[in-house]
Image (cartoon, rainbow, N blue to C red; front, top):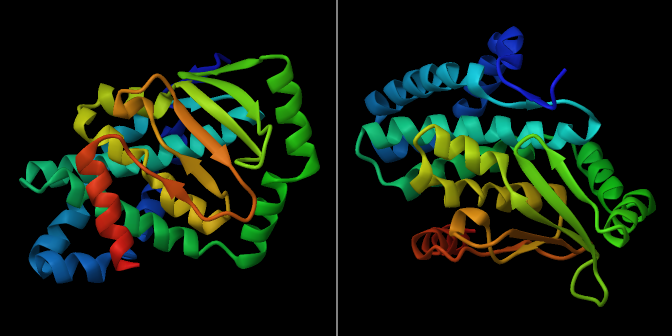
Length: 244
């Protein structure tokens, strides 16, 4: 099997659509409050249809190391479906992402506490630190589908370990399907994920912002600190933060 393939998810299409519909249902009250019942109902139908169109195109990366990347690609496809429908109706790109952010936040909150604890423990476990340290010392770069990743170990107290994304499959997928203006927002999905899973993610730049790489830095026990070099994206982050 090649490292990356499309069409893999067709066998799981109905399951993916059910899961997507559930995620959208979590923000139904928000949709009604913002847009009214009629548009909210129409939006739910249209984003379902848009996501269904994207399913055959979602890349799948084989192997154990591809598993988290596949999860991120699925989330990206869901967000892209929302963006495309909102854009069709003349809604601002930032508003599309706000809906996605809230949906991810609520979906992540459904993960049982024990599982979130286990994921956080594993993230900062001696095993993971050892693996990242070895890869960093060997200056290893991972090529997984459309992703290229290099590894770092914190030398001081600023972070425990990190990765630089030199190429990003999420960015490639979004651009391929007409969502280039939405790409810097997609990167901000990591805010809700880091908050929920305790990543302690610190990030100041992304490829989608036009930077050389995405600088992911992880610090156990720290609050999420994510910013964007795209001004309108940063404004949206600050607006959402002010409501928290």
